[in-house]
Picture 1 (cartoon, rainbow, N blue to C red):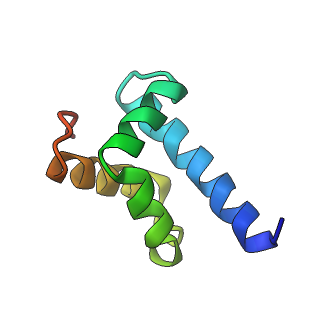
Picture 2: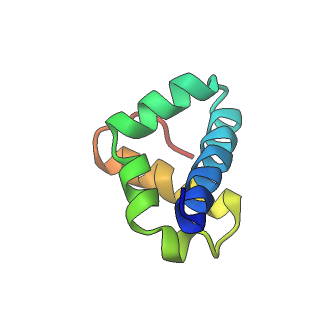
Length: 75
């Protein structure tokens, strides 16, 4: 696996875990929610910029993206 791809996966796992903790979800439920409401797509597409921010900022960003796509969780 190329190094950049491994970095993206590691970043996604970290952000999903932080999102799960923020909203008192299991990691599996957080992943399902983020997949359904485009949070994973956003993080993958914008990894270049998002990974330079704090994990907390990434959680805020994906919560907003998911909310725009019909998700009910909000900060």
